[in-house]
Length: 316
Ligand SMILES: [Zn+2]
Image (tube, rainbow, N blue to C red):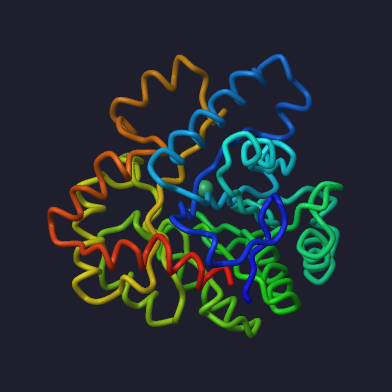
């Protein structure tokens, strides 16, 4: 029986059910909040997270994969509380979310030493708890594979090879970083079928997406509602084109929603939201995206493949 580590211990993959592969119950900057806690409202953050967990549960979601890592305020105890109070299963990662910067404490460690840190989270538990990481997160963005990014990718690769756990790699498709990221994993000898290249749905470039799929990886069509990166209509057209080409067995649908996000002050957020992400939420998929995809030809089988079968296969 294949199992996956959740915040409440291992669960049979058959119990994952309808799964959102990429959502965050809270994203804030760890250093800023530790130094300036008066900027943060713990109760409001908790209310937002629980309300989102209950809302997706109302749409039949049984599992939320939360790919928060270092620098995204991964907090195993907070995520466990969300799971305990909502009844939604939550799956966590280890890793570092950086586009280059690493603190001295990690810069002055080797790739192998960084890999050992990730392995600790997978085998012993996260942040002093017995909650184990189910996968490894890394990132490359507009700046591409910088020295810090390369180090984290190689460490993620080595931790994956040692533990057999899959990798989720945040990417920037407009710069085609996914291909460079896959090359790094290939150099390290990682089975490409263990890698999910997140945010591939931010482009309409089918040629790039198919070159990426040719490497053998999974792709995340996972930022529905973030119009600032790509409007919904273009995301829909891309997903439908890929479904027509038979790629439902390699894709995930999600929203990269953050119940709390501290990137902007409230005033700026109010200004940005109407154009940048007017419909963004943890339930947008169920309210608009999926009904529309079905109307335009997506079958129930394709939907189940992307949101039930693929999470099982990637996580196991
Ligand atoms: Zn994310």
